[in-house]
Image (cartoon, each protein chain N blue to C red):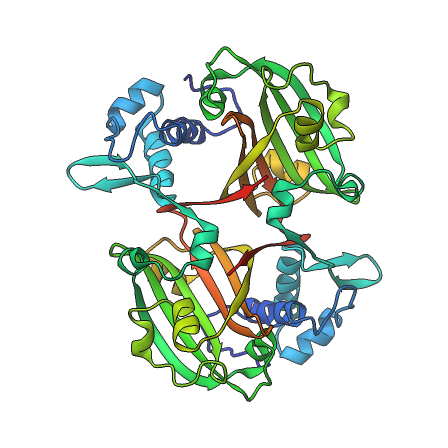
Length: 240
Length: 240
């Protein structure tokens, strides 16, 4: 690869694309240690400032991570099947691999907005649950869930500690679930999100909004998932 | 709704959220004309600069559009099922509603990167097709497709003018398709993308990378879709 100094694409972006390609094509696998900034700078014949900027961006985007005194390494990005992510239940590994940390668990009036989304009046009650989803000990998503109390009476904070919502709906409340509808969107991390997810302000995030419908056509849950992209590659398989 | 001047959230963002809610909850439907900036500024007791900024952002994000001399209106965002978008074929409406404009149609050596993605050697040939996907007369996506010439011999630019790739594979080449695997990502529009999609530089875009597999386990196509978010709400339905 040659860096082309006459291209309009900034040099650091050319370096970045080159490095990103090495990673996505798995020429450099997870755990691979990068050449030093000095080595890269002489390889590309650009300044170390250019190299630093390219590496900084790739660290931000989760392709690389630094270990102080040891160097810069290729991240192990986990592939995540979105359908599985959305529909997951009854799977023991999930509890172990993706535990939650509950930030808030409240009973409150739905209010105008959430009421409308769940098909309730403003005054009907919902559980409002804010959680962090973890992978190992790292935050990977923020979840805001709203559940009508009428459909799921007497839900307690401890109920959701060790059980997935879908399992609770089906096994404890004997609700038959029909489908989930999930809207995809993106956002740039605000201060609250950046803090919780331990990422820089303004980083690109996925927003998934999930409506879960019962066979009786009630919306039993509306959740807003705010997903980091830096530890995961999200995918979907469609049979043809 | 009251604007809270002591909140750390900037005023224009509070206004923006309020307006966005009116739209997403369909209190203001597609085509609804917004109050004037002056009316909004006195309603919220904030400056018209604050109102302008909120509206500017919502125009950028596709919630609103301006008609000069007439005012600002709510956009008609089409809901798009992602599975359908990915697997689509054989559907007459697609040709009418989502025509393509071909920018480039070339035969060339796969090269290292595309070769690796398609399971080919660097020297094997691929069709490289760059297209714009339109909704009505508006660009909604850029598509870059790569197809091994060995699996689809004698493909011509005119073949793809009026027919979807999947239809061609199955009906003309009698290839049995097994599944598509689609990776989700985001990017910020660069100059090239912003120009083609007629959006501001740096706007958030979805990137979908699709690998189509045949029953014989060949990758018959790798496509990179760069999707605007401003005319569409993308969703997915998952049976439970």
